[in-house]
Image (cartoon, rainbow, N blue to C red; front, side, top):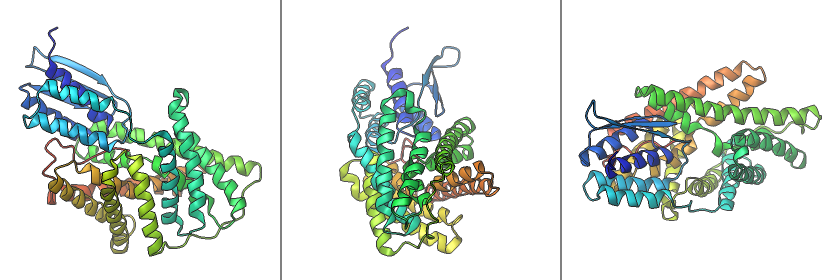
Length: 410
């Protein structure tokens, strides 16, 4: 069969967009526009696990099937790939030039080394614990537990046999270490520490995007993404449940901990700074974009607080996601870069995964509240989607020619 570099480029671009976390609708629209710019008639069907593309007129089509794997959050690579796609759509790059640049991007290693990734887990755990508990004494403990979980995650990804058990082992390790710390520091709440230490692993973004894809009638992609997010949630919850159960069986449970307190303004400021550092590393963003991450986190926190006061905790998240969506779209208009660079850090603060994990854990212990909490997590995810849709309708990102400015998965 005759070699066509245009088909090679579009196939490689499809795999790259899926690898770096673009949702199905945005990927299909971006690839279709690039194919039109290259003079190809093409149709694309994208799911989180596979991509099918047909090139040519009916009856003489060339079909390409790509097997894709779970998306990783890499905002630096997503930005570079989006620039290449824009270059093709605008006619500034040929298929050969774009293919060469794409190979360089996809072949490059992550910006931050493994120990920085583990450190980000600890920093993020300390930040999120401040938001959950409102207690200064608890944040360092959560940071140490989060660091241990981060090291375990890095090791799990290096050894293929442990990769599928990463979430389960993370939940188990977090629960055991948090309960052990409860004996050393009685002032902490082990449940909060365990939850904060795995918060970066919770699939709130996956749930949100799955709901968005179902709403956009991408039923196959949305259902698959929701199923994957629920499996991650289930593994984390089973791991944490086993950890609590194991400690309880040996009668080593710490004494009852004090109730959480409301986070003060200083705590929110410290949490915003720490979570921004953690998210910069966890999303593999450029250090030059640190200010962008900080602004996004602040907008999300302020929006969440105001939304909870104005509409309640469940529906106030829609107002918060509207604020984050408007901010990310405004940034895309002014900077002509993907809105996802500003959107993802903000959504990471609003993810409904923590509520979902609590729901699954409660359900495993036979509590009827578990089902209610799981339903509430889906309601919150729907609220996030509604806020983003209203933001897109109110202030669409001009840069988003290929659709890449909107959605990224966790």
